[in-house]
Amino acid sequence: MANQQFTDAIALLKADHRKVEDLFEQFEKAGSSARKKTLAREICLELKIHTMIEEEIFYPAFRGKIEDDTLDEAYVEHDGAKLLVNDIEEGDPSDDFFDAKVKVLSEEIKHHVHEEEMRGEGMFAQCRKTDVNLVQLRDAMLARKEKLLKEAENGGLPPARPRVIQLVPA
Image 1 (tube, rainbow, N blue to C red):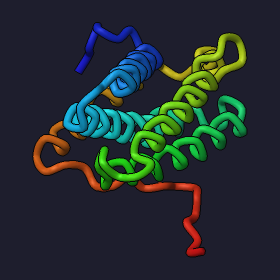
Image 2 (cartoon, one colour):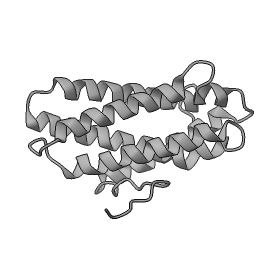
Image 3 (cartoon, rainbow, N blue to C red):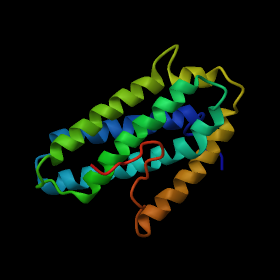
């Protein structure tokens, strides 16, 4: 399933990053509650799929090949975002703190993207220095992404599942 639109796995992930950045910008400018709700749901769907393909395919391919701390932090950042994604998906723009939750999610994602895309020492720079075939990885990620998009269209995806953060009752 080769897709020449994205040269490799990193190009695919960067395209996802740009799409979500654009959605967050649209959310900030949205005036109506209906538009905010639509954009919030789209942001959440994009982030759920993106984190799944990274955690299921991309990150495992680089374990032991790049700094463990870099991967560990990425998983924890994902989990923080997942908690907000689930809360936003269950919410409504009329709810208290809805806009604030989307804003904080946007800030968390900006930080995460910076960590991945940072020139020289970021995750993607480290990944490019390995022997992992980024084109094969792209193809596997695209196949999984297509499957997840179909699942989303046919009834939706389940709530995002944190992997490393343990929710402890207060």
